[in-house]
Length: 337
Image (cartoon, rainbow, N blue to C red):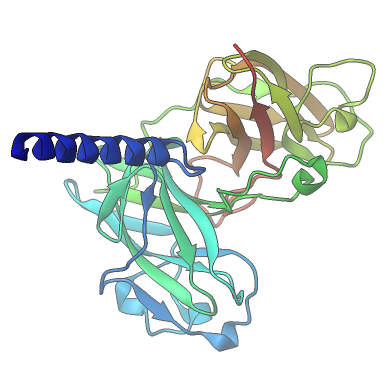
């Protein structure tokens, strides 16, 4: 009887573990995300009620400037570290909202997504809820090996567990990212040895007034591109889905920027590269075509293009010191392969 009871207990524990594993793998969140539910003493919550900001805010602050009013703090456009050191800073996250706000935090170094430490935990993607009515100041650390100039930026994805299928809920600027850039110089600020891909150059002469920096659109037909925006669609598991990246510069000033393709918040290859370099003369337009291999897992998968102006330039001289995106597209993957 003791042996039978022990056997039943063993099988019960095994079954419990298997059920827990299945539930973990089938949850709406990604099990590879680092989920922050408690914070160390190094993370602080500051109240700058006079700052008057409402909406997603992303920034940096040095520990010695925590007690300085935000608008009076020194610039965080450039940092200097020595070889062998990691870049360490406090990441500021705030919304001014009355409710906790879920986000997913990622770091890019020289336009590649990298693993980093947030509040002492290491990972590629960090899930957390921004506390209401405070500025969260969270320790962030990124290892950097090569000397010289490095572009570094933080990207914050809004509501990563929110997967609407209704196209109306996907219209720009719904679910656009927040982000902040900086330059990190290791030992010195010599020109970066990192190289961007050859630029894709816009052509033509458009009379449209709308600037389009990185929109996903369905392949060309008789409809204009603004009527082919990919907001939400259905697909089969593993399907090879035709897609175009649409860019247009209607201004009188040339634009030079980098576009990073992301699927389920991870960088992937589009048109042969995970970094697209666009050079758009005034009045030009560009379509970059490729086929996207969709995941085999059923459910909603998120596509997003983020863009960063004027790579490897001093942030005081760039078009925009922030990270931008306009929309997030949904692929509802279901059915048989």
